[in-house]
Amino acid sequence: MDRTKVAKLIRLLSSPNDGEVIAAARALSRIGIHEIAEHVEQPETDKPGGRAAFAALELVRLNLEVERLESQLAQFTNRRCFVCDRPFVAGRADAVTCSARCRTRLYRQRAAEP
Image 1 (cartoon, rainbow, N blue to C red):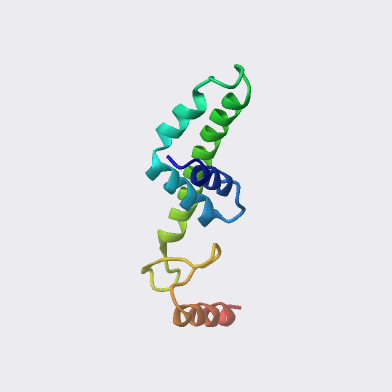
Image 2 (cartoon, helix red, strand yellow):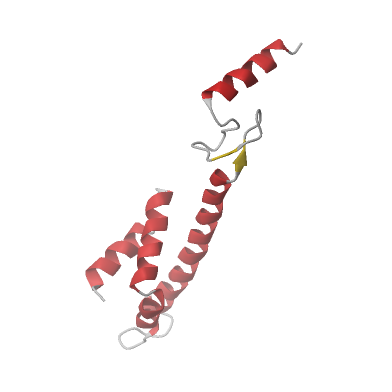
């Protein structure tokens, strides 16, 4: 296990970019998240309740954050078009139509309503 690579990935977990956080968490899983956690839990150099305990709690918090972000990502993939009712992958959080054609049709429908 390359410590510098693991340290870099752990730092990426605090990125404001959701994609980087998910990619870093998946990379840590590939390296062996349980192996990393065991290394953090070993109290060889730290006193109980010191850095190792903080790091273990931080790993738990970050795992929960990754799960939350993955569920948000799933919301973008499971959308249905408001106009034609076809499934589509949203590029934005507020997308309701699958294409420019449906977006134009929706606009014209709303403009025609009194």
